[in-house]
Amino acid sequence: MPVLRHSDADLDFDVRGDDGPAVVQLHGLTSSRAREDLIAVDLVGDLTGCRVLRYDARGHGLSTGPRDASSYAWSLLAEDLLALLEHVFPGEEVYGVGSSMGSGTLVHAAAAAPTTFSGLTLCIPPTAWETRVAQGAGYEECARVVETAGVDALVEAGRLTPLPPAENPDKPVTWPDVALDLLPTVFRGAALTDLPAPDVVATIDLPTLLLAWVEDPAHPVSTSELLHDLLPQSELVVARTHPEVLRWPGLVSARVTASRSGQVGRPSLAAQPGQEP
Image (cartoon, rainbow, N blue to C red; front, side, top):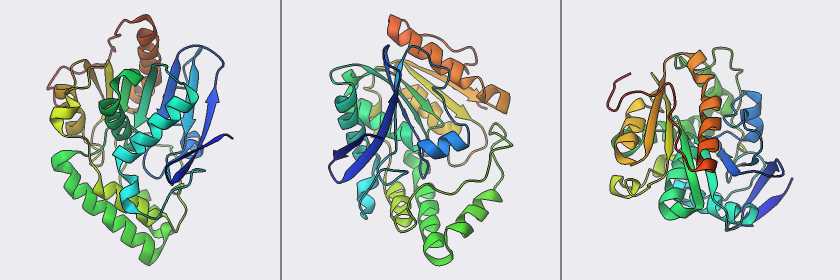
């Protein structure tokens, strides 16, 4: 697979499709392209007639990364993303799709270079601002568990944690796709980072689809609601059951098609502004 050297990381990526609009998909913390394939998480799987870029974030999967927690801030991951987009799709507008950490990366990238993107889908945005402090403490604990008890203990603790009701109940148990000696650093990097300030987020004037689900403390609906209030062209979809999540790839496909035609699509499952789950 091709690799781009950027700053202090080698970014491993692939592109499928030969023509059509450019799309990039970003994964979440401790995941990768291979892990998302294993657990059948592919929001761009319904896309046809597009060029789809997928890559492993620094320190994840087949990409390398330094042993410096500050190097895993979302703002630096956004710099990786922008360098990769300029390498693969030079001068083009790209539709961005990101899950969890990937959505945080996209928000930073869109704030820094809004003309790079034709639109965004932010899937299960993670904790931010006020809720980020407690989550950061949780990531520090994850790092400590890995260092003292090993990654198997971390995976077992995760296995015993109830899934959000909308998540796939048959999802296989998977291990973090991060090298064991680097995993604590990646967790500590996640603990240190956050979304841009709200007033900066409010400047992102791009068609944005927000996909959230209920009862997930690491990805609270409150983050999506705050983003929905801040982003001028946002639409919020809240899933309460897994069948609703299964409709998300179709919503993303409709958004990419709309971005190509210059029309902003409106998803059929949208919550009303301010609606509580």
